[in-house]
Each structure stands twice: as C-alpha cells, then as structure tokens.
Image (tube, rainbow, N blue to C red; front, side, top):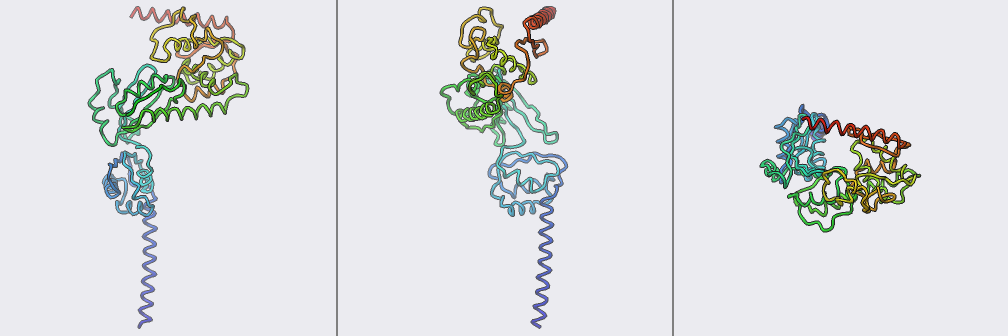
Length: 388
C-alpha cells in the first residue's frame, strides 16, 4: 500500500511540475510577446504610486492583458521597487517587459506636457506643448515672451503640475550675455549667476531641467558640453588648418555661425575665412564689427555705418589682422566641425544673394558683380515696400 501511495505521489509531483513549468513558460511568453495595445497612450505615473496601481491602469487602457501577470513579471525581474514618476509614451504592441523597462529606467518623461524655454538671438519665448500619443507629434498650447507679454493662465497651471517636463533650448549663435539674461528671468530656476561665462563657452543644445535647479548648475552643464564639442572638433581638424589652438577654432566657428544660417553653406563660408587667413588677408566680416559695438549684449537692430566699419575695436576684422581675440557668439557643433574641416574651394569673397544664402567668388571682379546684383535686389525690395 505504501509503495502504491508513494508511486501515486511521485506521479502527482511530476505532473504538477510539468503543469507548473507549462504555466511559467506560458506566463513568460505573455510577458515577452507583443501586447494588445493598438494605439499609443501616454501613461502617467504619479509620485508615490506603485506597480499595483500602474498595472490596473494599464489593463484598463488595454495596454496589458493581465495586471497580475504584469506585476509578477516586474517582481521576477526585480524591478518592482524601481518605479519612477513621470509621463511615459507606451507604443502600440509594447510588451509587458518593455513597459516595465520604460517606467523603471529613470530617464526623463517621454510624453505628456512640457514647457520649452527657447533662447534665440532675437528673443526669449516660452512654449507650452503637449504630445499627442496617436500621432507622436507635439501640439502647441500656448507661446509667449516672458517679461514682455502677460503670462497666460495655462502656463501658470501647467508649470505647477507634477508631471510637467521643462527644457531649455539654445539657438546657435546666441551670446553668453543673452543666455545668462534669459536664465535669470526663468521662474523655474533658483540661484544667482556671478560672472557671465566667456563668449563661446556655452553649447547651443537642448537641456532638460527641473523646477528648483540652480542656474549655475545649468550653465556648468552647457560649458561641459561645449568643451566636449570643441575638443572633438580640434581632434578631428584638418592637418593644414591655419589655427594654433582650440580657442582659435572656437573663435572662427563663432564667426561662421553668425555669417550664415544655411547649413549647407557652413563649409564654404569656413573655406573663405581659411583661404583669407592663409593668404594674409583681413577677414572683413560684419558680425565682428557688430560684436565690437554691442559686446554681445543684445541685437544692434540696424545696419552698420561706414564709420563703424572703419572704427578700431579689438573685434573689427576690417581693421585688425587675423582673428579677433575672443569668439563673438556661442557656435553650435556643426559650425565647430566646419571650422575644423572646411571645404576646399578657391573662394575668398561672399555676399548675400537674396535667397537667404550667399554668392561666392574667387576674384574681386566676380565679387563686385555679386555685390551689384545684391544692391539691385535691395533696391527692388525697398521699392516694393514703398508701393505697399
């Protein structure tokens, strides 16, 4: 009898193990296979939430087939204690495994509402926008100029929401004074700024910030990024470049940045200045004259006078030889690489062509013809303006 009982028990145990193994394999297959979601959603995880609440929310929104299995998978992966607050874009067909990774990886929120502070050459703006999960595109809710226009109610409301993201976007060619002035006016940041960082030391890029971040820490992050970009460009520079240091490369890049807003032209513009340096010609570039007048503190807002082109300042490249003593703006990565690896051209002149770009020339006669054509375009536009 005991032998029979033992035999039956062993059989039961074996069957139970097979069943358990089958359940585990099935559960793992469900956890790792594509989920039922057919349209992207923005999952909001509040501070203080837990995997139980998140799993129930996911099941209600049709993102997971089983809230219990989702929690078991998170426990098995040792992720249940790593839940992060934020707003997360869950893509169609996302697996439970991918969703667990998404809400525990600790990065910035990937959807929801964000406030973008855009520091441009001509103005500072604050844009409130929201990601539409169905199109994966941001929809603008409001945009205004802080300190110039009245603060919209929607901005004040969204700024206080726990899941709002904040980002600072620096345009290429802004000056250090413009950046510091803008940071001082951002009501989500704390702390004071002592000295303004050297011109050219701040990288035009996008920076995620959190309410209460120190302004000095944000500037330090911008400086660290620019140092990395300058070092990389200097390391990759052409061997015959007429520049003696990374600082000179940074200065040349800032001039390129201010001379053209057309990405495809940067290499040609760089070649003009490099050719001039190689031939001992003065650079004769208007943005350096403007910087000598404004010192980077705002926009000149008018054309240059002939007397200003002749005036002696440390930055006026119509007067000085070679490069000015400092950068004239904060150049972006593309302009740094253009300065490091300019195109090979015979050009030593360029002038605006009326399309937003420039006409390049090898000889003075060619250049004078291009200048004459540009003057005609200016006159035509002025006449059209008068007729209007």
